[in-house]
Length: 209
Image (cartoon, rainbow, N blue to C red):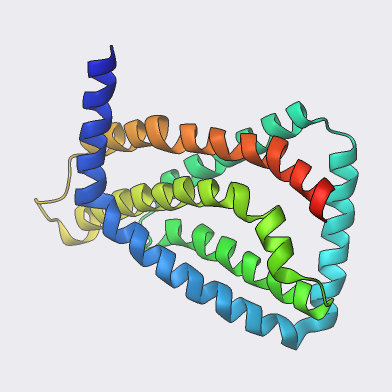
């Protein structure tokens, strides 16, 4: 059994190096630049950002007060794996780059939140380190992996429909490869991220913020 697991992950690692690695690296760089841009833009829309952030914070506080850690974990985990699946499925839409949009929006949201913290004169670095970094380190991996899978599917779909390239991957292979990556990488790492967010991050917030 252990040898089968090792072989499965070995094959997935080869797939990652061949099809996903460069996409993940590119999206990470572009995403960080997007976050910086959103951070700067936030200062030009102070009133709107403050109003929206206050509304969202009140909603989050209301929701969290009704949930225990276990419920929060299930909610976070189910939401994340759904998002990962949607990102991959969006690759089937024959419009180039759709899977990338969610990742860029996520990075932009981080930039806007950091900008909001600066506007409100919070200790932004401390807040991010305590309330975001612990689970985000794990959460960003399956998001980028889902985007890479989605773009792999997207490129092949575009090649089949518009360029009639024979070098594009067969549909069955794409589906199987995408499903394997989702099941053995995306879901397990989202599971760890949800555990940390629900049981560790919440405790850190209570202690340090």
